[in-house]
Length: 103
Image (tube, rainbow, N blue to C red):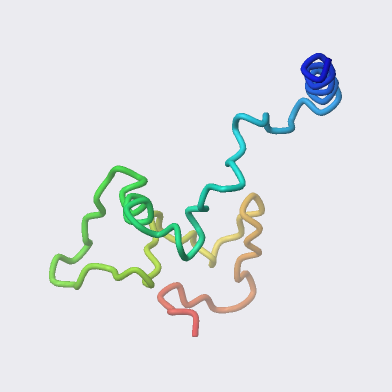
């Protein structure tokens, strides 16, 4: 009887909450989260290769980026020119310094 009630409840939840993750896809309460301090063993190091490609330096004489360095994968947009799609107002009516480092 309990199994039938449980199956009915699962069917009801699936019908009324279709985007809710299933019980099988949720981690068990006893498992250690990858983000927890105790869960950083082999799993934590595995994430470094998540994207399966190696970045090539623009200038090979520069040191490789460290774990706290920001790496830009795309060039910055031209903030001197108006681009409403990107929300850039442009610098019309005033001089634009497109080589500024933004400080």
